[in-house]
Length: 117
Image (tube, rainbow, N blue to C red; front, side):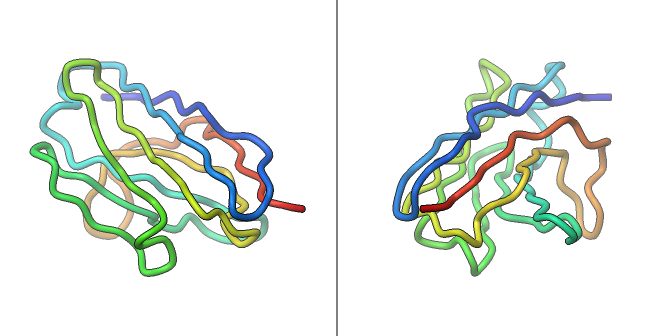
């Protein structure tokens, strides 16, 4: 099954931006709906955004207008552009194969995002 490697996290001040990348391990990635998720300390995974194979997107209310998800099927990669970051965006960010309810795949290592002044 497809596996993912997330990267691009870091430390940023409120109002700043980061671009996360998610590299998939196999070509079947191209047909999947891919979701970005995050997990804050002490909380469960939360869906942030998702994108279909042909580019339709959906965002959580908490990030709409600030985050943009995109994908490059040729390079098996999904991106999450995060602007106007807030301290409450602090979390480990993961990507996964989306389906209603819990994601379809296993969790990777994720990439840590810390938003703080």
